[in-house]
Image 1 (cartoon, rainbow, N blue to C red):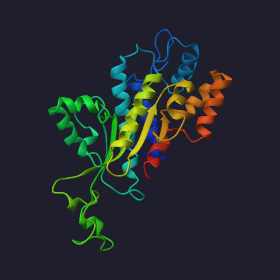
Image 2: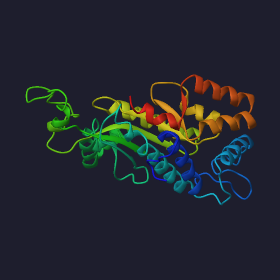
Image 3: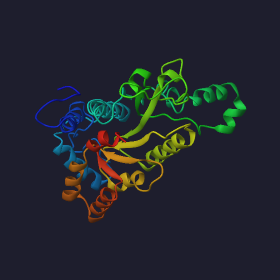
Image 4: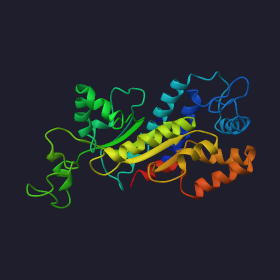
Length: 295
């Protein structure tokens, strides 16, 4: 099966299944010989019960848990692969030259300063590197280290004028979406995705801080700011999902499976929290992500 999965099922459904197969086959979601799922908190009985129910529903295999950094990087690539297999195929409603790249494992490259509306941050980074006083004053308030970037290429005039004569040499001379306005290829940042296989409170705060940096430092429209997690504990998911103003939406890697696990193994409080997050439009399944990226 490839990223652009084809079967009697819809493309999104087929790619969701492929995404879960990758989580299992690569050992991102697994069950230890002691019966503990890899995304569980071994110090929490509630976490272990819900995570094990989820892992079994996804067909997880029994194997030793891999190191956290390795599983995190593989999770990022699996999410990016799911996006590549779905969102670019929505050309009829969201045309464009789209790319989805997992950059979290290589923090030295692929940062947002390579894309509009953050290109000015490259000049700021150079100035900070050359001026210790400036570095002390700004700290890391402008640095953004994303996990996944969804980008699009600026549009050439032939495409812009294909159906109507939309642009000429007299107008539309500043927009970065018009390729002719730059003497070099321009890539525009459409979405920034933070991937958290599991969550702790500090991870939620790091994601929020990064989101606020994206909002504050842009020179143009803010990209979609999204988080994807496979965390089984609703209390931890809610630490990121509750509230508005920084994260657009939190997506769960397997929300129907989480719902079934919480119904079978979770407390009344966990069930109520899950209902609040979903009915309150703060938590969705990963299958909703390609459609939400249309906006």
